[in-house]
Amino acid sequence: MARASTRTAFINATVLPFDKQWRVLEECDVVVADGRIAALGKNAVARQTVDRRIDATHLVITPGFVNAHTHSPENLARGLADGLGLDDWLGSVWRSLDRLDADGIRLAAQLGCIEMIRSGTVAVVDHFRQYPPRLDAVDTVAQAYQDAGLKALIAVWLRDAVGPRNRANNAERQIEVCAEAARRWHKPEQGLRIGVGPSAPTRCTDELLSGAGALAREADLSFHIHVDETKEEAGEARKRYGSTAVRHLRDLDLVWPGLSIAHGVWQTDADLRILARGGAGIVHNPMSNMRLGSGIARLDAMREAGVLVALGTDGAASNDSQNILEAAKAAAFLQRLSVQDRRRWPSTLDALVMLTHAPATMFGLTEGVLKAGGRADFVAFDRRSVALAPGNDLHRQIVLCHTALTVRFSVIAGRLVLDDGRLTTIDEAAILREAAARRPKRGRHARRH
Ligand SMILES: [Zn+2]
Image (tube, rainbow, N blue to C red; front, side, top):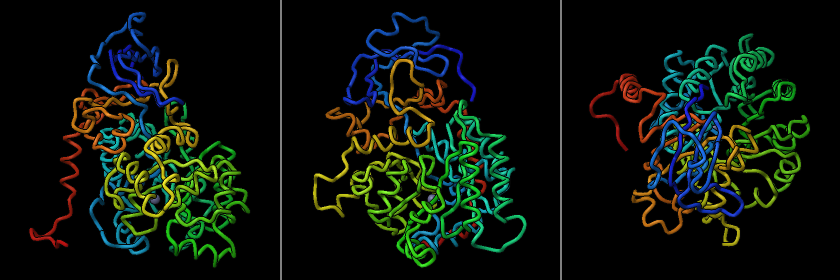
């Protein structure tokens, strides 16, 4: 990721550093240089030489957010297959997405980048599915993230227990694709990581799960996997293993801090204790869980057990947006329908932790707090917007009001990728024209319901 060599100062901002005290710093300067926050505080710019001064009197600056679970090819399938549960939905949506050409993969990733950057995301975990997994596809998506300037963990999606068996999709071959992808693209210092991403325990052989785990430990890669998304899936694991999916992962020695589980809707208290003890995390995807009717994840139990929880949008075909702030609002509210005890409801500050602090620990792409000397990954909201008026409680309003529309700046690894509302790394109009040209041809009176 290219770094700006210029020193940029945001002057007179309101800064929410997301520190332990959840302070609100008024009239605060933020100076960015060499990918870092060179200075932060009142009149901090006075002691600095800078190339560019941005009047930030109307801006509220916070750490950038992490979208900890999505599947970028689905950006071409928004708004399709509504009203289906997971299994029918998978069959309906992915038939046309599994073998995208390079242009399709790039375009899908760029569409996601546009929406994520515009709604405050600075880093994404892309559980990147193409079946069977292909190196050229990983090359294309990795290049797209590098060009866009969005930090990314590309967890290469793997699956060998469903579908036809042949040389192209056996466990050994798929793990080799991952290993080579890591050799080419695993560059943590540049904000780009490769991970192994088995689809789900019951969709993979133990040979693949163990092999992927061995590679992850050897090359220091994340291990990202769907677990217990639906009740049926949890039941299938019990039938197959005679125990739960999490206990099976533990038996394969796969529960360690590198493990992150997408969904975990149907886990038992014992499962959550195993994950907490092993230092593994869960990515909660409330919008997708609602869209597919998968269930209400037990966020209160996860947090009580001490499991790290991050938030994901999930793919755009089961959400259908990539706006992580929607997921944060849903995470804060959805629990309140299933948990009677108000003391166990997640607060908006808990939602902000899930957007920043927790994924920083889980994936290492970001730091999740703003401080002098820290990494410069932050966003600036426009305080003059309806969403932030009249400014009663800025932390709460960022989660609960429609703030995604008010993001004016995004700084990722010190680079201004969104500059006063303009994307600097992506030709947005050209991408949207290209997307419109790919729209499936239908009759003028398409079916509505
Ligand atoms: Zn998913």
